[in-house]
Amino acid sequence: MSAPPPDLVDLLLWGVLPYVVLAVFVGGTVWRYRYDKFGWTTRSSQLYESRLLRVGSPLFHFGLLVVIAGHAMGLLVPKGWTEAAGVPDAAYHVVALVLGAVAGVCTLGGVALLVWRRRTTGPVFSATTRNDKLMYAVLVLAILAGLATTLVSAGADLAGRGGHDYRDTVSVWFRGVWVLDPRVDAMAAATLPFHVHALVGLALFALFPFTRLVHAFSAPVGYLFRPYVVYRTRDRLPTRATRPARRGWS
Ligand code: HEM
Image 1 (spheres, rainbow, N blue to C red):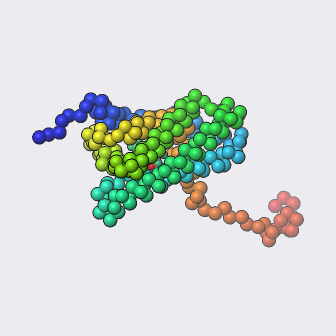
Image 2: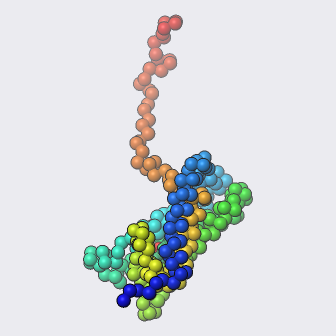
Image 3: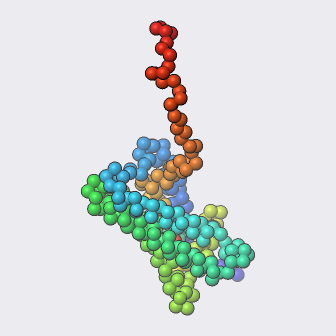
């Protein structure tokens, strides 16, 4: 017997929405690049304040890099692969929980510091647009909802109720989206915190091209690998004073 057809809301949320967001993300980024190349910037506010920025920015960005690595691992690598590699499911979840929670808390702490700085430093607040405020709100919500999924699952695990294993639901749906086979049934079976987190995450991706977040695509990574700047002394080169005087017009 074939599986029953999915609920219409589930179909729209998990079967249609991801593709709408993908189209907005790609189309919006190309549009922004073509029509607003000179507005493609973080709109840095370092000149106005740098003490809080020096702490908040690395805390947020390095925390986020670990969160992104965790998402790639959890969403893209099938459960069967880690099991085949001899990683027991329980061990996987403990590592994911500890690493995920530490990275999530750093990211949240970093963004909290950045938002507080933005609100309390006069010139930085003046340079904050409505677009920025919306972006920060969705960003903070995405991080909070992500941490909630991790903590709710861990809490259920600790209470012996068995936390929800997103690798059987969210991850199956997520991988399906990329091969044009979104597993609406799998995502529909996830719990509410995961649904809320995925929806806020999708909202952030839809906003991405129209905000300062585009700077992520132009991070100066090449700077880390650029050749050394070579300084040479001019001491032994003839200087104006030691160079033999040229003849008049030559
Ligand atoms: C559609 C997109 C997304 C999906 C499907 C998704 C999925 C998940 C899942 C399954 C977890 C639980 C991981 C665990 O418990 O081990 C999680 C956690 C988390 N997510 Fe997302 N996520 C998405 C987008 C985002 C975005 C855009 C952000 C923020 C910028 C974000 C931030 C977090 C954080 C901070 C955590 C908790 C810490 C961690 O486990 O890394 N997520 N996400």
